Length: 211
Image 1 (cartoon, rainbow, N blue to C red):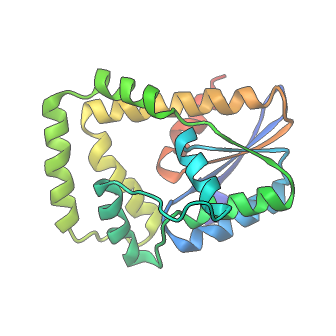
Image 2: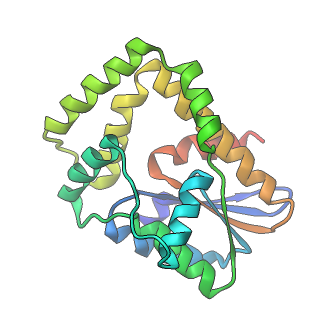
């Protein structure tokens, strides 16, 4: 399964390694550890907002204990529990912090900050689409998923929301933003490990490949 989540992209500036993870599943640590040890990157790019990365950093240094999750994330974690142990904050991200500190590797957030995301969301999602997404979340929280693996499940779950036009546009914009931000790091670092949510991986890789 690791090979399906891990891609090596040869760029003019260096090599970009992309790993797709499922935030919340405790077992995801093993994929992060394997990718990091295999690449030994000079920089780790992680597809989370700067604000979330700051919170995770404080938690890793035991300066903060709480990591807030949205109702969407709460329902998602409940469903993910059918596929294994779940935890907050995401174990894969905490493992990244541990590895980066152990090997003195820089870790950089490459997702939109809260301000940019809010602007994109407001421009893309209508009030009607927002209402539809709320109804869909209530429906999905009661649904029994038949997906045999967490990889298939997370894509089905994500597809239920990105099929709403405005939400799909937001995620495509995020994928472009993440791809551009990660590529910029190659100008300074020759070996970059990019860790992204598995459901965004294909779109991010496609954007990077076009550059």
